[in-house]
Length: 335
View 1: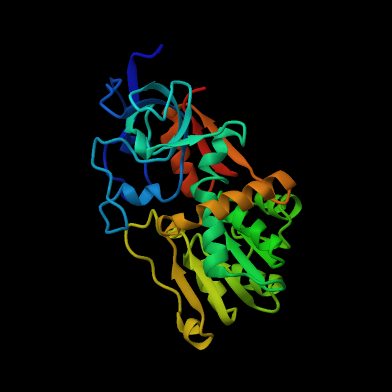
View 2 (view 1 turned 180 degrees about the vertical axis):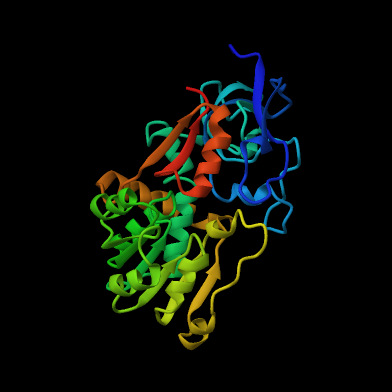
C-alpha cells in the first residue's frame, strides 16, 4: 500500500443557502486499522448526488445530518486492500458507503462484491446503482406509464431523469423532458429518443408544456418540485400519477418556498407519492436484470460526468446543485 495517510473531506461549516467551498475542508488522518470481520478499502469512484445537500443541514429529514468535522456521506466503488473477512480478498471490487475519503474500513456484511466484467465499475454508482433503481422503481411502481400516455420528466438529462425517460419510452409512452440548456435538450431528444425537450432557462414552462403535451400529462416524474410542478399540475389528466423523487429547486433554499396550487390534484383525482429508494430494495433483482438487458441491447443509453481528484469534490457538488453537470456526476478518487 503506497499511501500512508487517508485524505478526507469533512463538513467544516453548515451551508446557508448555496454551499460554498469554504464549508468543506480537506484533512488527513491515519489509514484505519482492521478489526475482526472487517475489510480495508481504497476508494476508486465517489458518487455525488443532490440528496447530499439535505445531509449538510439540521433540517428534519429522512436521514441523519452530517456532524461538523465529519466525513461527508456518499456511495463509493472501492477496491479491497486488506481483509479480515472470508468473503473478500485483496483486489476485489466492492460497493460501499465510505463517503468522501480515500480509505475506509467496513464490516464485510455491509459490502456488495462487484463484477468488473459485467459493466464499467462506475456504472454501479449510476445506471446500475441507486440512481438507476430510483428511476426504475419510481417510474414503474408509482408512475405506471402505459403505451400512448404522456410522461413528463424534470431534470431529464440527469442520472435519474435520463434513465426514467428512456424506460418510459421502452414502455411505449410519449416522453417530454425538461432540462437546463440547449445542449441537454438536444441530447435527450437526439440521443435518448425523448419526443420533446424543453429548456427551462429559455422557454416559458407553462406554454412550452401546453405545446409539448397537447393531450395533457398522465405521469410527471418529479425531480425538482417548484415552478415546474406548478406548471405541470395545471395540465394533468384524470388519474394522473406523480412520483415525487427530488426537490432540487428547494435544496439550497434558506426558507420554504411558496407552494403550488394543489386544487388540480383534487379535481383530477391524481396520485402524488413521495419516493425513497430505500423502500424499494425488494425490486433490485428485477431492476438489475431489466436494466442490464436494456443496456446490452442498446435500448438504454447512459452518460457520465467524471471529475478527477477528491479535492475537486466540493466544487463539483456545488455545480451539481446548479445543474452544471451533464450526466451522472462521479469523482474519480483513485485509479
